[in-house]
Image 1 (tube, rainbow, N blue to C red):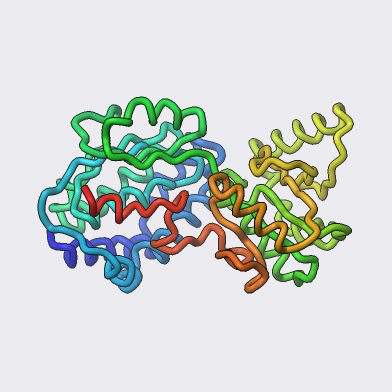
Image 2: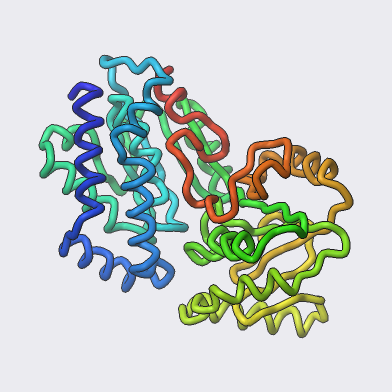
Amino acid sequence: MTLSERIEVLGQLGDHLLGKDEYLEAVMKRTAFHNGWFTEDSQQEAIRELAVQMLNRDRLREWLSRYQLAESSPKKVGIVMAGNIPLVGFHDWLCVFVSGHQAQVKLSEKDPFLFPYLMKILERLDERTLAYTEVTERLHGFEAVIATGSNNSARYFEAYFSKYPNIIRKNRNGVAVLTGDETLEELQALGKDIFRYYGLGCRNVAKLYVPEGYDFDPLLKALHEYREVVLNTKYKNNFDYNYALFVLNKIEFKANGCILLVEAPALQSRIACLHYEFYSSLEEVTKEIQARESEVQCTVAKSGALPIPAFSFGKAQEPALWDYPDGADTLAFLARL
């Protein structure tokens, strides 16, 4: 397939996903039964974002115009997908597909049904796409690898895949910088960055930087709009466990019934918890974020508040095609193979 043909079939996939597909609905029900974190609403949201952000023909052409992609010498690229949110590894596969390489995909056991069905849709749209993707239980015969996991699993990936060209990703989290001047609408939009996918994504905001003397009441009231998250049993169990843990250990915290705020320096917080830290100046917090760049997936702030790139409130889980995880340009990596 030529690059133009690959773009067109991806656009057709995006069109299909924005329509009604009863079999896809059945696959989502099966996935939700298999993994209680992957509710049907979460899956629908993930699929809609894929269709709008990643499978739009104009966006694809704009993205790919920045690269020189060879149409020959395809390589077999192993992809180890994470399973923290639905279809989280789709962008890696997309990069391999548009670059003309062959993807050998190791799925997460937490998300084993959605991706194979999307590949079946692609095959129905153009049977030539079948040659570009293999889903396997064990990677073999690959010439390069893209692997995503925890800090712990990354150590194993680095040891096992070190002799191959690779991109290996570790734990990262989103952070948000508040000035105290945010409107109610902005604070409610921030709730999307915190609660979407129950906070399990690497782009979810897990840490707040707030000015000294910050009034948390407006924030807690705004985030209470997302109180339906506690209807998910797995989330509610984590909320109750952490609430009891903080009480028993006499750890000071703030709560509104659906989130627990605790002062802590770590960027990664527990499920149903949100860390916060005070700052004295925006210059100080900017230096802090820059110093911890290897831990930060994305930053959220009011437009123009920071001298570093930042997403607007509510947009952390809507990355463009060129917003690469961990800042590693996946397509440039693949173009060099």
